[in-house]
Image (cartoon, rainbow, N blue to C red; front, side):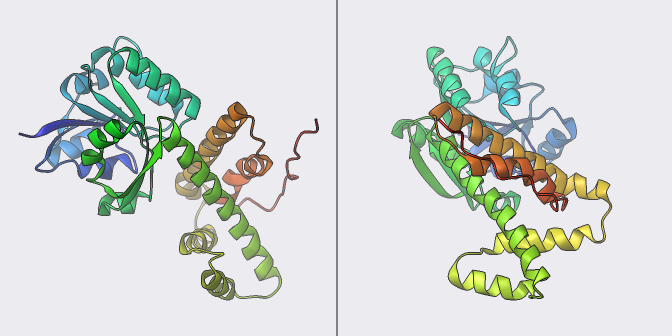
Length: 295
């Protein structure tokens, strides 16, 4: 007998993850505010739901992959929210990149209602979601991990148990901070190399040989530079601008979590202030590096 599994948020990552739940083991129930996204998956064999509440009433496992804290909050709370309609014992997995403080709050609220809520953010991009080779970073108990893993394994190559609830999102925020900082560094290094008359390919070859540069960093910098020469600002904004805004949101989550823990991250603030311009190739102006506050 198939297990009813719900997935909310059918965007760049959510859609391929939900598609991989259309299989012999699971009956995939899907919901998104954008109706055509739901209709597309229904045509592939999923069961479309008219609301988050309807999905929650049907499913023992609910994955949420939406943009930010506010969207997760709206799905969970209120008379039409998941908390009001899910059955006791339901596992709710937050795949969104959000603040740790909210994950901990939602987990406690869920527990008070007899529900289980864990954080299970993902990394790897849409292409790896399609291939089933994502990495999941799970924060929750061993029992909750065991309950959620069969669902995660449909799109995962690796599942990392980061620790108790809140640990998965902490790991994701740290990972994203490193990644976005690498993007900024690669763009600036590329600019310096070109100004010195060097081929960017030479920079890539040396960086790849000693591990300083990875292929994703190089593809971002070189791809962005090639596209900006032939693409309108409007088209650039549709792709690179959207990615930059997402990067800023993720970095703001990291900074918020760091502030809550009393951790000073001046580099994170610097990268956050610049990341949208870096993605849009508007990064010639350089704001001063943030300074650590004096005590």
